[in-house]
Amino acid sequence: MPGKLLFFGGFAIALGIQLYIVVLGFKKSLPHGFCCLIVPGYVLYFALRRDVRQIRAIFFWATGLFFIIIGAFLLS
Image (tube, rainbow, N blue to C red; front, side):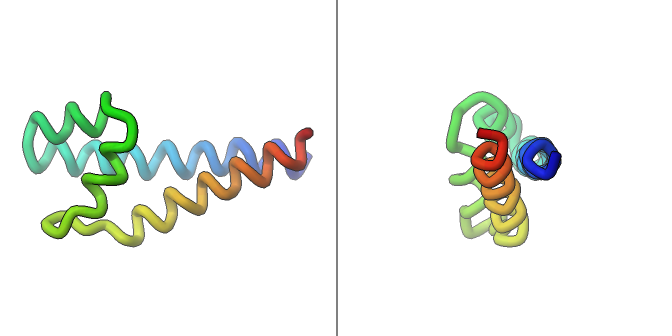
């Protein structure tokens, strides 16, 4: 049971933060928004740029990924 909770909770956190960064990309410009939405890894690049620096968002995104990994480990 805790493995499922960690896995799906981490997935929800990571997905929510990723969508937050996509919205920031669309606020900056249309091409940035579409790149964040479509290109893998561009979310991380965009969030770490100097003009939109989102360290807290990246921290929570990484926390979600950590929960996914721990949850998958507990489920196996």
